[in-house]
Image 1 (cartoon, rainbow, N blue to C red):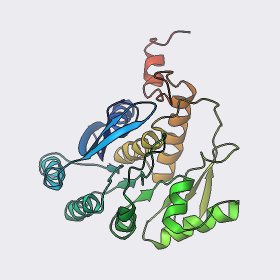
Image 2 (cartoon, one colour; image 1 turned 135 degrees about the vertical axis):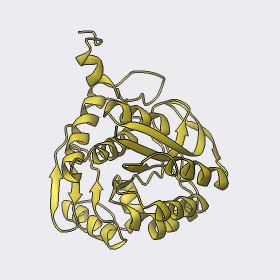
Image 3 (spheres, helix red, strand yellow; image 1 turned 45 degrees about the vertical axis):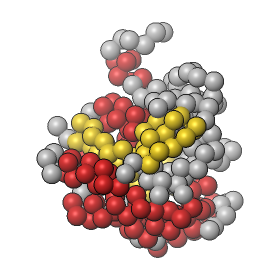
Amino acid sequence: MKTALTIAGSDSGGGAGIQADLKVFAAQGVFGMSVITAITAQNTVEVRSVQNIELSIIKDQIEAVFDDIPVDSVKIGMLSSAETVEVVANSLKKYKPNFIVLDPVMVSKGGHHLLQEEAIAALKEQMIPLATVITPNIPEAEVLTGIRIQSEQDQLDVCRAIKVLGAKTVLLKGGHHSGDPNDLFFDGTDFHWIKGERIHTKNTHGTGCTLSSAIAANLAKGVSLKDSIEISKSYITTAIKHSLNLGHGHGPTNHFYELYEKANLVKA
C-alpha cells in the first residue's frame, strides 16, 4: 500500500490540519502517517491557543517514520516558527522524499496567525526550494512575493516570482476571488488553468489542507502532478458541496462523502 506523511499542526476541531490530512489520505486510498508540529485549541469559530511542539520531538517523529516505513510522499502544513521550519527542512534534506507538497499555512479561517512573521523568511529560504509543488492561496502568495494580486497578469507574475524562490511548480489557488475559484498551475514552463465551481457555503474549514493532502496522496500512488491536481480539485469541490454544518462558525468539508455514497450510507 502506498503511504503519505503529513507534517503539520493538530486541529482539535477535526476540520483542518493533521486531522483533515489523515482523513484525506484514507479517502484517497493511501496509508497516512503524521508528524505534529504544533497543537492548536481550535474549533469552527476560533483558534484559542497554540502550543508549538519541542523541536527535538518534531525531529524524532520524522526520523521514527522514515527509519522504519517507506514514505511515498510528504505534505507540509503548519510550521509556525523559523526553528520548526529549519528542523523540518534539514530532516527532509536528509531523507529526500520523492514528492513534497507544501501548503504555506499562514492564517486560520478565523484570522489567527499560524506562521510567525520571522518564520516567513525561513519558509522562503529553506522550505520552498524543497517543494515539488507549493499551494498558496492569494493572500499567502502576496506575502511570499510582495505582489498585489488584482488581475490575471498579476497571477502569472506571482507564479513566476514563487518559481524564482526555488519551487519546482506552483499551484495558485483562486478561492479568494469573487468569481469561480479557478486555480492556476505553473509547471515551471507553461501555465494551466484548473477550473473550479463556486459553492455558496460558509462551511469551508480546512479546504487548503484537504486539497494539498489529496495532491500528496495521488502523487504517492504514482499519478502525474497535473492529474493529481485535477483529481484533488474535483475531490475538494465535492467535499465542499456536501460540507458538514457543524459548529457555529466555518464548518468542515465532507472528506468521506464519495465513499459514503458508494456504500449507500448517504441519505437521499
